[in-house]
Amino acid sequence: GENVEQHPSTLSVQEGDSAVIKCTYSDSASNYFPWYKQELGKRPQLIIDIRSNVGEKKDQRIAVTLNKTAKHFSLHITETQPEDSAVYFCAASILYRGFGNEKLTFGTGTRLTIIP
Amino acid sequence: GAGVSQSPSNKVTEKGKDVELRCDPISGHTALYWYRQSLGQGLEFLIYFQGNSAPDKSGLPSDRFSAERTGGSVSTLTIQRTQQEDSAVYLCASIGGPGHTDTQYFGPGTRLTVL
Image (tube, rainbow over all chains, first blue to last red; front, side):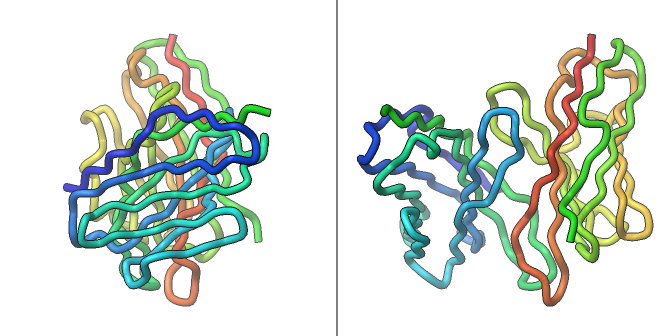
């Protein structure tokens, strides 16, 4: 089955600096890679996702890159703000377009702390 | 429309008792997933439904855990003879069929505490 590793487990950055979180996956059939943000006591919320037919996707201050050959993908947050402080989870799955996908296999999470 | 809902939001039970956790997916979503999150940990897959059938039950930790889904909508996760290690937040997520987004949307979770 799929195995997703995520690093680092904790990350502290100064407000305004960039943060990078990296994940690797094992199953070359995986084609869908979402990132979830989870604030304390709240549900995971999707912040960005990427499919295997693209190498990079950007949404304002958040970007995700995917290297299919190396089987790794990364989350980049620029100009970090205090509200970015949360736990971030990467995940991998096989997506059957329009019919749902197999289970998401999650990384173990990165606790990001933005220092004012 | 409304998002994924779960009930109860919190459940405290005694060791050995049975509990039922409910998930109401987004209307029209065909696939439904149950995950478990222990304190400070990541999300652990439990079971996945496509319609009323469960193609993947591989994450259920023991035969004390079971789940069903009726009418292609509501799902119930049942834990029999609860143990203290069952204490966690149980999350469900749903995803749409043709014409719907591929994103899994999570419910708010049920926090289960086994004393």
